[in-house]
Length: 285
Image (cartoon, rainbow, N blue to C red; front, side, top):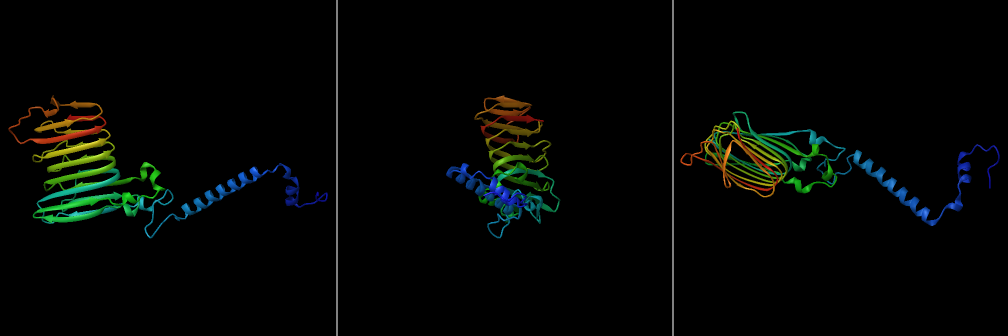
């Protein structure tokens, strides 16, 4: 049936213009699948834009909700009357930096950009005699939402930790994945322990004038740079896996690297480095 000549009903014209004979069951099924996919995409986008991915009372960071990432969480731990300090950092994934430079009244200061509030570190402070011990532990990295799993690097956790220059410090860092930048030339160390899973690691002791310290460094997969003052009395024992080794300003004897003028009879900074896969650069500067 054709519409009367001169009809101004556009819907009728479209319906009459369809070639129904060309419709098969396969085409009908394909059209239904296409409509379903389009409906899902529209619904998904609406939920994302409205923050509808939140599974509970804690807001979840998505590519459409950046509040948690753009707001730094700053924490200061006062030195009080402690005459020495220790810090233990357990870090899941992201970028971690540790350095000196905390204000004189503080043992440590932390600025944290977390991917979601649930991934902010838990802080624990205890006192052992005259030593004050701080623990920073990331527990929320095990609860990452699937939307966040493929977020860009700028969405990773970022921790910036500053330590007191006024008291001797023991430093322990356990990091899963990401880059670690550890600058401790201004800190008076008693010991340093660094364990990393995957990512590049820089440990820079340039300008160090503190007391003797011992160090144990385990680097899993990634490049490692270890830098020490050339005037220090330092001996490094290196266990290398797969990768290249470059050194400057150090003398090598088998698996040991020593600074110029090294004397075993004097107090020695004893460092043990174990590398899995990746290049190693040792520098005396």
